[in-house]
Length: 118
Image 1 (cartoon, rainbow, N blue to C red):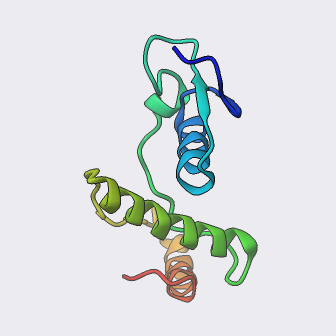
Image 2 (tube, rainbow, N blue to C red):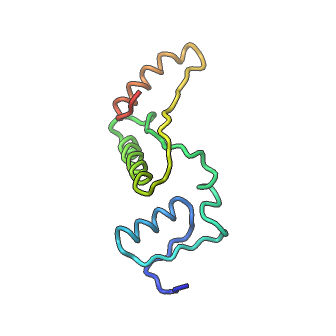
Image 3 (tube, rainbow, N blue to C red):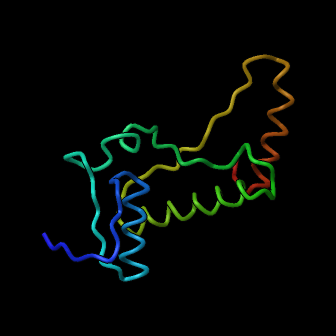
């Protein structure tokens, strides 16, 4: 193993891997990725639900809504570029009580304002 590196990234989860990849591809850095486990994504990253958040619940025009939309599209583009399978399966939001029905229309409008389809 080469011990010369410019940057050490600690942790081989999604954040550590994305950081290391960006440093190599965008900055041309020599990166050493340090992971305590025998494999990558062994903790929280490997146990998440795999949901790509749409930004449905964020206030239109807010930083969260904008970053969620940008991040979602960036993630789809990354998957395409890397040949990684993914599915755009949508999201189903239900009212569980009659008094919640009116809120669904407002939520649908918020989603459209935030750039979502459906």
